[in-house]
Every structure is written in C-alpha cells, then in structure tokens.
Length: 461
Image (cartoon, rainbow, N blue to C red; front, side, top):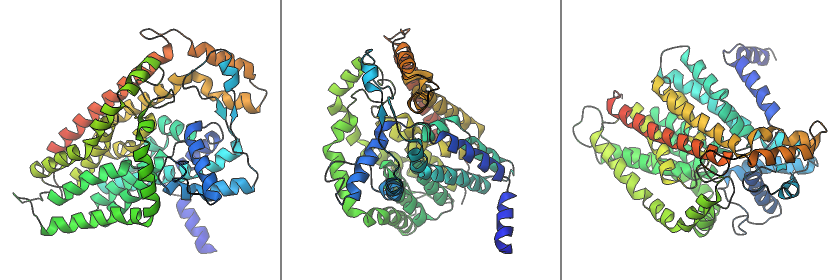
C-alpha cells in the first residue's frame, strides 16, 4: 500500500498533473453537451448489427475500418445494459416548417450516453498530449518547452470542440500518426509500422502516409554517403517498417477486405455532397454542391493518380535529401498534408486533427510552425460555427431543460440561417467560403514551410 501511495504522490507532483486534472474536468463538462449525429449514427448502426451477430460491412451498415468498433463495442453494450438511451431527439420537423434546410445540426442524444461514448476520445486525447510531451523532451534541451507544447495541445479550443462537441474519433488517427513519427525518430521502424498499421484500422488515412514513407526508407541516402545505400541497409529498414504496417491489417484481414470492397463500390456516395457537413467551400451552397456532384468522375480520376505521384515525390526526396531523423518527421507531416490536396472535395475540418499534433511538436524546433497551427484551428472553428451560429450551444438546453424554449431555438436558428450574405445568398455561405479559403491557405503555407525545412534542416544520425 505504501508503494502505491508513493507512486500516486509522484504522479500528482508531476508538472503536468494539475493541467491534466483541469483539462480532464473541462472535457467532462463538454462531453454530455452535444454531438454531430452522422458519425455517431454510423457507429451505432454498425454496432447494433455487430451485437446481433451480423457483419456490418456485408450489410453496408458501417463506413469505418474495424478498430473503433472493437473499442466502442463494450461501451455500447454497457450503455445498453444500463438502459441508457442512444436515440436522437430531433427538431427537424419544427425547422422544416420555417424552411430551414442544409447542414444544421438538429439532434441531441442522452447526455449520460454521450459521456460513455466519448471516453475513448478522452483517452486518445490524453495519450496524444503525453506523447507530445515525451516527444519534445527527446527533441530539445529546453526544460520548459515540453510543458508548453502539452498545454498548446491540451487546451486548443479547436481540438476541444472537435472532439467533445462534434464527437469525432479523428484524435485516434492523430495519435497513431504521431506515434509512428515518434518511432521513426527513434529509428524503431517495426514499431513505427505497427503504429501506422493500427492507425489505418481506425481510418484509412495513415496508410496514405505510410506508403510514401516506406519508399523513402527504401531509397534513402544516409549521412556521409554520396550514393543510395541499397540494397542491404535500406531493404532491412523497409522490410521492418512494412512488416509493422502489415501485421495489424493481417489480424483483421477478412474485415479489412470487406471494408475495402464496400468503400470501392460506394466511393461515389462518399465523395458526393448531398447537403451534409461534407466540406469547406461547398457546405452551405447548393449550387456549388451540384457542380461538384456533376464532376465526381474527374475527382475519382485525380485521386487514382495519388499513389504514383507520392511515389515519385518520395523517390525525389530520397535522391536529393540525405536522411536524418528530423527529416523523417518533416516528411511524415508533408505526406499527411498532401492528403488534403488530393481530397479537397471530401475534406472535412476534423481531418485537420491528423496533422495538428505534429505542428505542436515542430513548435519546439521552430516558431514558424505556429502559423499553420493557428490557421488550421481558426479555420476549423469558423467553419463549425458558420454552419449554425452560436445556436450550437443551445440544443441540449432546449431539449432537456426548460431554460430555453424549443420554439425560440427554432426561430433563432432560422434567423441566423436566413441572414443575407455579402457575396453569397446567405451569411453562413460567406463564412464557409472564408473558412475554406483560410484552410486552403494553411495547406499551402504548411507545404512551403515543410519543403523549406527539409532543405535547410541539419541531418542527424
């Protein structure tokens, strides 16, 4: 018992302990408040099939890889056993009477269920912050910098709103990408591959980062060498990294195959914009939505060239850049950012979370990475609030309490949605366009900063 008490005291005396407690309490306050219904509905539908012995992929009930299903399954079953309701309460009918259309969140779900549902988000969020702290300690000798970077991540308003109001599980993807980058820096290539493989089981995006990184490891030049050290050293590194990526996928091979078949057959529906919160520039403008939906074939054709383009870029980097541990970190961020350029039509603001932890880590190397971090965070916040204004905070009050009348909420939403815009029909269309343009500016700035850093960074072994 004394040893346990001593261990608890040592943790409580850690410089992060107070901030972790405050940040966790803040998250617990936000957790029961709100959630965007579409992702939650997708998980709930597939888990319902899963609990009843059906294959959610064969029945087209799931749109995500299997990892989060296995993580949320016990929570979902516990909620069922406790009798917690996971039905959405909707005010859609009231909104339709006053001609409100488009991406307005009109649902609320049981607060107790939401607390349980968002527990994995809290765990991955905290793990990401701790990993940032440990990563920065490895990178710099400044004893204040690790805590500073942890605070920037843990109290970033965009990450709080994205994870605990929107209820997005993208923080799990962010954690695994950052973990993969950490192991690359430590030259632990098998572990790095495992991290990217596990991340791919949460969402497919990490594999699009891992593939070009594998090419870099295969063709890389090393310090003191004027030629590519191929095949001995590079092949071993490549095989370790590739094996790490393959092992998690192989463990879920049947489900992964079914998931890929589902996504291949349904990619047009995934890309098509039907009025939901699918993207930046086009989220609130039906005319732009129609234009994009007419050109889905072109979008698919462009995306099909992604593997060839990133392979060519990876080989060029390998030829002209001698490898170093920091360069591998920068390349991880570069290829993560490159995904956004190839998915401009389906890019959702929560996807920005994949790269934000890397920006926070890079702040320990250069203050200039603060700019893309700010731009991405501000752009994401503007987008979320532009869709429906401050009414996002009023749904739970109107649904579960008498503090705010439902009719007044509906009138308030209608008033905001119908506000005239400056250069579009509605103000929220203007704001969506501004946030989309700001996000795209952040992507360009990120690409420029990373390329510049790759050329000027000192190589390390």
